[in-house]
Image (cartoon, rainbow, N blue to C red; front, side, top):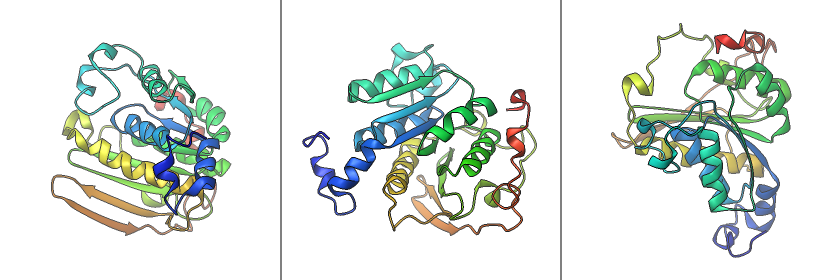
Length: 257
């Protein structure tokens, strides 16, 4: 462990040297390398999570630059996962960063997620989040749901068997095209960074097994209105995923995602 790099963080009673060591040994999947995922990945790496797996199938576009600190004009046209990996390795050349330029479909999710300690959400669609939820619940891997849109965002830690899953919060997948997206509703540049800070903090709490972590606590933040609220989500006894363990999104054709 680099004593100087993490010296200010090790001073925190919430972490200490043992906590810092545990962060260094953890492996985290960053699912999606856009505005949200890039900031979460950077925050985790800077905090000492040095083993990161990055998955994203898209390339950097000019419209990404207003909200993604990791990308510059020179990255336009490059795969996001590879561009983010290069950025992270400039921060910490000794880190283990594995980019996958691929769609996170059922096959990829089943291959990658059981090999990590935690999944952080940088996704931009609910369908793939349902898939991640299925695989994480199936294999007992914690993950952190996080979403951003317009001037607001929300995040919730999902710890299998210890709290609700995503389908306890959103039981039914809305019809395709019925939900607003950043492409249709817009996104304020600082919003992904703010939600990434919350997500990264939750990730650290999960990896440390912190008693302060509250599975199922949904935090909603509106930056423009300067408002934050929390909601305690209950585990649904009839949830098809964490209740009945029916992993239907693992059985869907990848083309549907």
